Image (cartoon, rainbow, N blue to C red; front, side, top):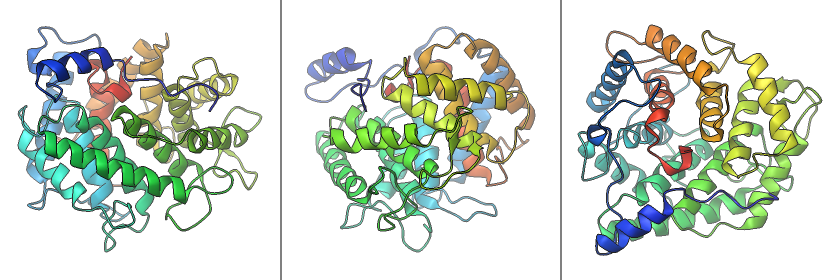
Length: 354
């Protein structure tokens, strides 16, 4: 990476809250404390968000986890982390907010899923554990800043340190990651999950080796085809993958590389290939999870048009029970991703803020 990772834009506020709160940062703004809905959030959108959050709340297992229901497997660690991120974006912490109990149980489940190696996984259910590992680092890194219990915050920080070490050791010689930490191979989607996980961990004050991030960003740059898209893996030539390209743009912007020519070409590719008002192909929800973040965080002029169309699409897709079945993967996966996209205008999480 040529430019340092973008720091948390709430850092001055977090520091002030840390001092005023006697050692731990206070809760960031909650939607219930915001007098007006942000631009793009209609009353219908807010109602859809509320139904989706309620769906997650009532489908959480007694263990604190969520297990996906669909043809791709349960993946409780990955699904719990994604659902946890969606709840954090509503302004909940482990102690405050309407869904604080659910966030608390999710955090406990994920923290108890850490193995001695530093990998965060449940071996009986996670066939591709590096996804869950990365999503959990994302969730816990954002949770850390609003955790009021000093002992628990230290536990999260230490856990993230071990997780970063595992991610660093698992990196391939080309700079990417594969589905398992011992594969010594790589592909784009897992690589992107780890890059965002490292960024979130750094938000929590965990030391992240610069060379690891530099090599990962070089991996993405070298995986770019002539059309601006990113192929599945660096080691083999192949067609550009729209979902991986969208995620790569998000990583470039997360890293502060807004002027990167590679990011500009990848963004143009996504604008051409990802119509917001319809399904563009396989892994559509996954692609828009990252594309929406990239547009919002960068303040791209296309954001307002994009969000209005994607918002209306998601409102049409929501089931009567409040769930979304994204990409045919399952209900927890689809609901969590839809909620992340719809809640971006609330500007809650440091890693997804303008």
